[in-house]
Image 1 (cartoon, helix red, strand yellow):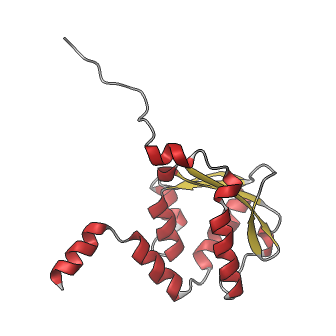
Image 2 (cartoon, one colour):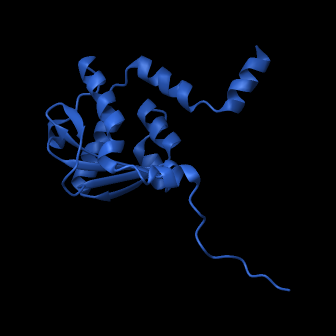
Length: 159
């Protein structure tokens, strides 16, 4: 009997299905809280051009969508308004971008970062992400979080 290859899209993982159940404004709470800490530490200032704008970030591999707005000098979850800019990538790509290990242009041209919406706003965000000074402790924490278990095991075996 002949079988034909399936052309249907791969089924979402359990984690992706679970992530899609979280409302975008609620998913934005941890990011907004982290930004408040950064604000308190006087790090990661938000450009004035972003104030009052609504953004959406989708972490593809988690199926998680976060919607927030820039108010004053901080981010807060947004329960209303249509996102003017949408960014989507994997968790590790977002974290590598946050650590400054890779830039948005590289991810975009490798088709690992999608950007939809207001082009001018997208350029402002991209330039801000490229130029912002990252606190060394934040970069170190991100590197610990994105380190793969195999890298940890090989490092421990060599020690």
